[in-house]
Length: 516
Image 1 (cartoon, rainbow, N blue to C red):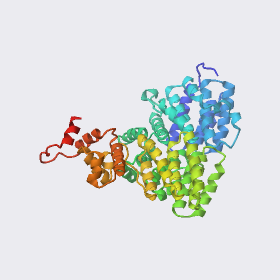
Image 2 (cartoon, rainbow, N blue to C red):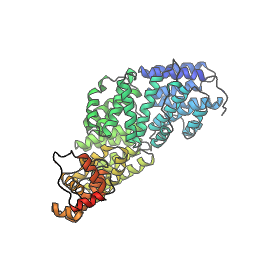
Image 3 (spheres, rainbow, N blue to C red):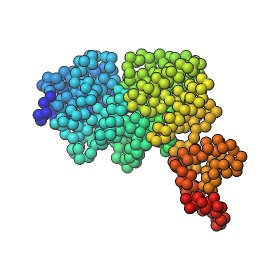
Image 4 (spheres, one colour):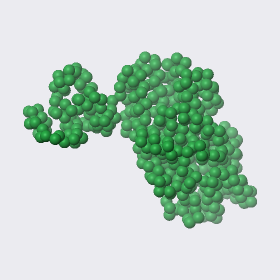
């Protein structure tokens, strides 16, 4: 591959701007036609063939995406410039994500299939920073579409998706690229299980929306993205506000923008527990056109979930059978195993449901799809409860909660609590919940800890066994994120309102605690 300056870099910039403008205006098909026409007129058509493939991806034309990407790779092989390989590689990555079974074989895609090399090729290509940012964003999008969440999150950690205004010229579609790239970053962090990080970036994006810094065509996309994160972070007041503002009925067109907005909103509704609302949005999204493999599988899983909720095994089996047509693709396999787990549980076969859910968790974790892995763990617990194995269910959920509490995925804690209640058990408080995460009895124990009582004294005061007191003390320490009782005493004192009258003199035990 040559690294000499590429005279087509200006043409590449013009093509990227045309494509972003067409996507914003809900007409990616027009960008596809224009790029193909430019490719037909040029001696080196690689960039425009690649742009046509990317436009086909956004127009939900998977077969055409694959065909154009293969043509771009063959053209890049003839020219050999880094810029050509960067464009052709990104086009090939998108094609492999949406339609790996159609068109030419993977071997024919050659260098375009080397996803691990593409970040370096893009960085070394002789392109304007604006074009480089566009290619990096599309590569991360391809990883997400292929279920390579760890790879997409790694690109985000390297700064991919942060588009500096200085990188764009006066005529560049900076606002459109910035919003697309920011939403990609939020999704990559979220699906990787880094919910608190996604929450911060989604908040910044939502603030831009309120400052009118988001192009009008992307308003609903930003709202749907923010809803997804807020619902999974259990930001209840914000989710109510977002659902009131979301106008999915206004979405039109058969393209990636429309279907993606509907699906993000559907996943948000699902996190809120509104399976019916999520299913309605899924039906609308599927009507937009062929979805990416991962979105197709997850959308079918939502329809299976609704059928299970409505106790309709016939419908559940029908949706599962439709999903199993993609079983040859590892992208779809985690969702398919979760669907089978739901259906087997509905059929009264909890042992097979456990096996399917455990397989789904393993496959999801392998690709860094941590949100999906968490859903599989909750399914596993549900099946274990049905199999009369509540202790195993509790143990599995406890491990999940260590991860979800640390990552900010508080919806997982809420769902886990529901599963444990069905087993007659209760989850402990989350780290940092402090007084708000304690039951009435645990609150009593916290107050007695703050008063300086020992476990034995607490047991005698509350008429509890020493074993029960130890369990309550452990939960109180967890809620306060404390390693010692002194920390709990200090925090309880800080949280409680000051008394109207001076407190009584300290007991000997309390004096000892104070000295400590």
